[in-house]
Length: 263
Image 1 (spheres, rainbow, N blue to C red):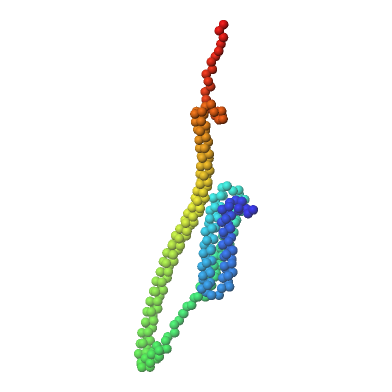
Image 2 (cartoon, rainbow, N blue to C red):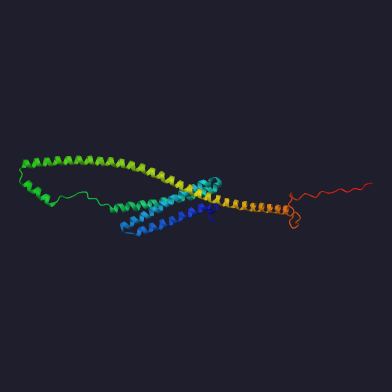
């Protein structure tokens, strides 16, 4: 018999679901290695991410159940359950690392950046025609003007880059705060889900106890009705010998007449 099943059937059920998800993740990553199309790889990664999210939620349920049973188990059992939980977390972390690896590889394959845009041919011919009609001084002045325009464009570019960095920093901070908030909400929802499962189990147990109590009450009611019926019959027909007297409720004895002799 599985040692976890001996501790708690609910723990064994959660462990079985986690093991099923681990097998699905292992098969999914093996399938991902054979996929060459980027879109199919992306969809496969999304499915694996959903399975990892479900697995994380189940591990949290396993941890809560272990903590709730901690007081009634001995030290060896608690150590065994904690080791099992840690092995689950390590295995899940290994799949998370694989997911990050494939995600970064997919992003690098899809990234296409054009660093420089070459000038159009018509624009180059126009500049050549203008330069041929200018004197040397005009060319120098034109060059200085273009350099000034370039410097101003560079300064504007620097400002835009700095503003972009500032916006990115603010956005990153806001996203981090929202991520932390969402993590807290998820943890609270997991706690509520766990509490609801516990409450449902408790309600079922109470329902079974109430049903048992109702049966006992019905049986007692039938006994009381039977006793009342016997009393009524004895009162109506006290000479009926087919019904035995109830202890403590027998009819009063007839008055005895004492006979004595007169001397």
